[in-house]
Amino acid sequence: MDRGPRRLCRRRSARIHGQARGGREGRGQLAARVRRAARPDRLAARGAAPDGGGDPAMSPVRHCVHLPALPRRLSARLRKSLWRATLTATGGVRREGRLPSGGCVVIANHTSHADTAALLAALDARHAPRIAAAADYWFATAWRRRICRRLAAGFPVRRTGGGLGDLLAMTEELHRGHAVVLFPEGTRGPDGSLGQFHRGALLLAQHAQVPVVPVALMGTGRLLPKHGSLHRTQLRVRIGVPLAPTAGPAEARAAVEALLQVTPGDGGSGARTA
Image 1 (tube, one colour):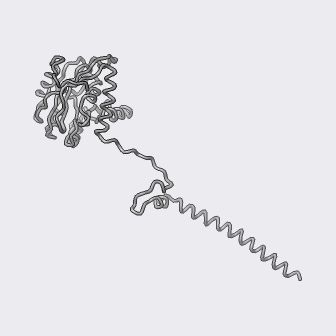
Image 2 (tube, rainbow, N blue to C red):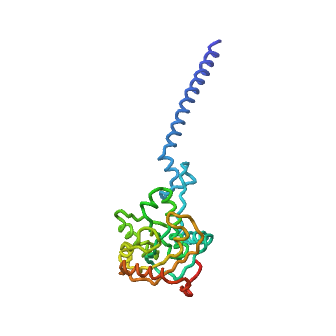
């Protein structure tokens, strides 16, 4: 009479042990599946589209979003507006003349850090000017490099060897219609006088077969003297007649010097507020 209850107890006990063992095995298998599913290659495969592209919304791995760079000419318009507003607050800037259509090498006298701001405020944004900057100064530290590239569209030129290669690398920019701005003196003049011109800018123009445009900057040395403080001054940017790509240093220097010697007000109808 007692065998029935004993068999029933043994069956229940076996079932309970089996369920416990099955539960442990089930949890182990579940954990293994989770680990396999969480492998980086599985995650990448799940986030990938059939054509090989990933769907960021489906992928559990979050990546940094890199915004596309602004078009060059839009960036140039923003820089022009920024520097024109800045210089308006310090006395304003007036431009005489215009750049020719197409790419060109712009050469200008150099007396102040304000020279770059004056050029960016005055030159046409359609040329999206690129400014040559001394690599050993403007690209020596991370913060200077960011300022030079973002606010001045600067590119590095080495002054201790390799500078010509840096310049010739801008040939494609010229063929795309950009203006490449260089200061042939190589450094800021100590007293505002025009120094000797180096050949680098002219070799770039000859290599790319684009015109050389002389530009005279006036007032920048008073606005921000070398090693000095800021003074309110109106600036003038005078753009001269383009020279042939074969122009030499003496001819280029003479063209800039002639523009510097023109008395204020002789700009004629070409004078305008930048």
